[in-house]
Amino acid sequence: MPFTDPSCVANQLIIVDFSRNRLEKLGAELHVLPSVRQLSLSDNRLSQIEPEALLKCPLLQQLELNGNFIEDVENLPETLIHINLASNRLSVIPPSVAALKHLVSLNVSHNAIDEASPMVCVSKVLEFLDLSVNRIKTFPSRLFPNSTTTMVHLHLANNAIADLKPFELMNFTRLQTLNLASNSLERLRDDVFAGLHDLATLGLANNSIDTLEPAVFADLAIGDIDLSNNRLTEVPIAIARLFKLKKIDLSHNKIK
Image 1 (cartoon, rainbow, N blue to C red):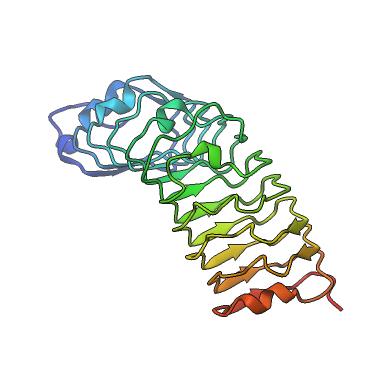
Image 2 (image 1 turned 135 degrees about the horizontal axis):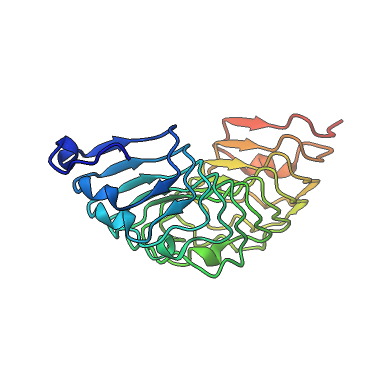
């Protein structure tokens, strides 16, 4: 880490960007950044973060650690509201992340997390969650039980979700974006999206969907839906219920 003298300007810095360097280890040197709110360490070679390292930044709110070789991260400052751990080597949601009470935005995409992860997020204010490109096979609401009514953007693309149960999402009353592209969905039953009255964008591309039951989109206000690269043989009658629809992609299906 470049800063070694505590008397330098480092102690007054609020935003620090070390992205795209060759850092391999993070240790006690962060004590020279006591005022930092935003810290980017993305796209380095980090595989080791000392247990107390990030606690040296007691005011930290935004942390970018994406694009490293991290398997775990310990003892995060409770002030964090945004953390990006995409493209690392996580097999579970780290306990330190799950324990963040004020977390609003979490990106753990491009890892190896499944829905059996023993850690669940305690945050009651989580609005953005990206779990894309992991190993999830069922809808992972158990991973964030306290945030169903606060979630606004949920990204689950490139997993192995094969089924959605009716009324399973009904508590996601603020959800505006739901991306389920590149999963294993085949049939979408009536009421699987029941309760999602704020849903505006729905991504269902690159599945194996051949059936949309007639009332699957009942009472929804979706404006943008992507059903490309599926197995539909006709324009689904369910689309007729989407009175606010502005954009639809039905390319690469089997419609005659």
